[in-house]
Image 1 (cartoon, rainbow, N blue to C red):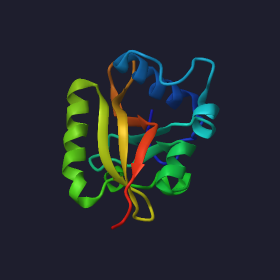
Image 2: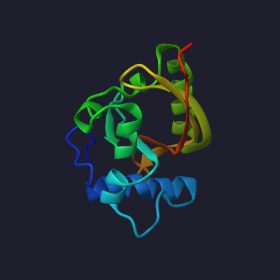
Image 3: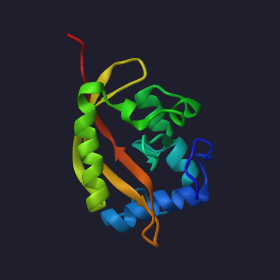
Length: 155
């Protein structure tokens, strides 16, 4: 499977990679079992993002909740280097998190400062970040989900 910007957001193979790796690594389901890729992309009330495993990873997936939260369209998101979701001063902490996830498979309870397309900032709260790892153990990138955030008001 190639993870690039040409991925269909409702692709069943990617959906299985995303939800299957979450289930295997985190130990629970990402979404109710009666929901599929269309629901996750269009109707899920929580953010789900994924980037590929390139040296400077690029987002390959951002559901509707992620697009609304960050202010990017699908076509903008899937061209965006994922490091740009954090401000310059937060990128080393973000990279340390991603390195830990690569070693451990996932991390829960993550809190991180993020930046939107317009430049506004918010704290993502209680996030889960996990490896996009298939059943054979091959890694394709990383994904994150969160449903809580706190806006930062400019001073």
